[in-house]
Length: 339
Ligand code: UDP
Ligand code: MG
Image: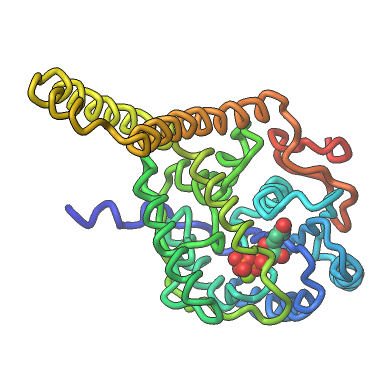
């Protein structure tokens, strides 16, 4: 009976529509090759398909290349965002516009090999709702990135009250029901790596070797990665606020101990003989001050995020769609043209 939870419960239809969602920001060097690779692989899934390119405010020739791809191939849809809204927004826009029974999210730079998609589709047909790419190895990344990413994934997963897979990026196949559930969430600031696991459903890994970027450069500097990591934690977890509790308890314990020592006559006598150094006083005062400031700052981060959500600005704005018909999912059609 133990294996029952892994046994497939649904057998999905042989055909159906597969959407591939690709966020693109300054990917002129690679985008044509990405399309070619997909055209070579997708017929092997025996599904009809559409490929949705989301141009996330590229400043190079990406958009021109996408226009030319879409001009030749009606299965290529282009969603041109009005500026650079960030990868999370671009992927969310793609999910809202995808029409498929299953939707794959893929990076533009071929780090996620499209050849893995047929295996994801196979798992989906067997009844898996989220077939996520899990990295067996990662080529072309610095040792620093490998270590920090691995540590962050584990730290992040440990904070979440639901199961979040590690060594996993955005490369995954989602069933229509999962896409609908995620897109129906009203929150504007979206971190898909926690939203998709939040929805639940049946998740299974598909192991693969992550490639080096085929061409072009990463869009994430160390600073941007750090900001993304902080944002991911803040929008998905209450743990930082809880940390300030721990901090205050620790300080209270120290204060309590110090009070006892001070109340002990002999100790006080010793103190008055030697005197307490000014440096020690400053050290204690600044440490306590720092702890208090940190607590205020952490609460402030949540206040800012609450304010942003209250403003209710859309996650992205669409300037133009090519070969598309507007968003499918009303909850996230926060662009006026698609509504
Ligand atoms: N991307 C995007 N908007 C951004 C930054 C990145 O749409 O503001 C896209 C980018 O074109 C790529 C994917 O997100 O398809 C992942 O970006 P990148 O390869 O630079 O990240 P890395 O793989 O280095 O973590
Ligand atoms: Mg990449």
